[in-house]
Image 1 (tube, rainbow, N blue to C red):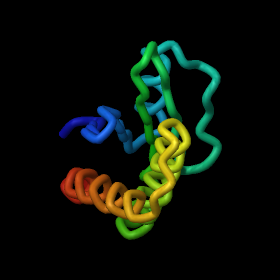
Image 2: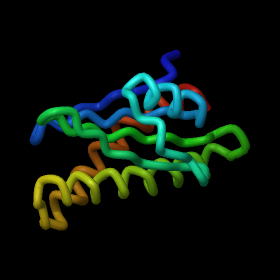
Image 3: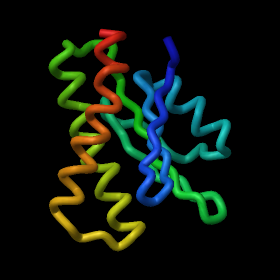
Length: 116
């Protein structure tokens, strides 16, 4: 099973990449040349910009959590990801926000359910 899952938001061609461990999240960021982001809680969402490409990276520390808590963390961090996306592209539509949250959750949750 892969350590990461990547989902593309086709509307704006933005990748959302999720990791289910602090170590994998940091290793990925370090490969991208990012060293100044810390994961102070059990979840974090970071935006990366390289040239004109905008990317969202989510880290979830699942180790000590029950499956329902993991799902709650995922929704929480996906909400942050959508906020960052809206800020980047100037979106303000609540219905779009809800559809994006639904889409991303459905894309990621199967991968998580297979693991936990």
